Length: 329
Image 1 (cartoon, rainbow, N blue to C red):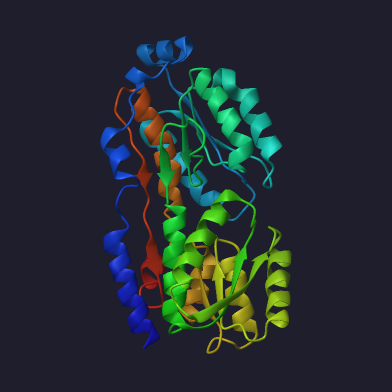
Image 2: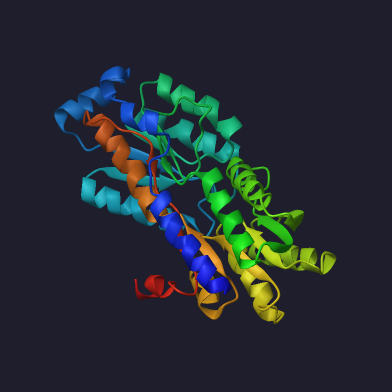
């Protein structure tokens, strides 16, 4: 019963949420003709020199980063540019800022996923003022003067996760939310959407948001402690890549597949296995490789005079019914 209902939700989502973010902005777009491009970059473009595109990710040590890196590498090869994937080890805003500042004189374009929107917005604006185009990807920084964003609508994806949780719980249950960094803007956005969607179910109670940290052992321990403290929990909703498999692992180890439902994000190998085994009911893909590719591609298009606009990488929902598609790939 739950499987059929969940698959129907996934089908509707696939139809509705592959649309661009912000239709009005998408129609208008931005063009280099309206941008004060640095002379050295304009000369490089005019001369056909190889462009240096830097792609800064907010934590290159997490398990999601290799998927982004793969897309950046593909863009480097297919677009014949020097695309460099970089970023801090651990979510360190100061380290991300310092690395970007060091490279500003050599970059022809910057794509950035911010550790902190507040901390990075002033830097993004300074890079823009220096005549270097900047786009955001994966995590947006809408308060900055960035040109466009490539990635998933985080609030909407949170809503989708919340709706899925409501579906697998048959609209009744006790839920904890897990996240690597509850203070990060991406997490706040996803949780906002998730709580909004779960609020539509009077029979569902959210008892705690668990801030797990990023260490794999700490993530599992945080979930284990939360479950011990809240034995009535029947649903775990993860907001990101890395607490999702930990939640599924807890369910599997404790023989709780029939009483605790898990909904989360991304397609890490362990997550895919746990969906196949029934320990995770649904996971939402945000096309990270595409995000890495498009982060570079948008900058190249912009520098080559094309009009660019926000790009939504969509919401892909995987359950036990269709997870084999990922395994085959």
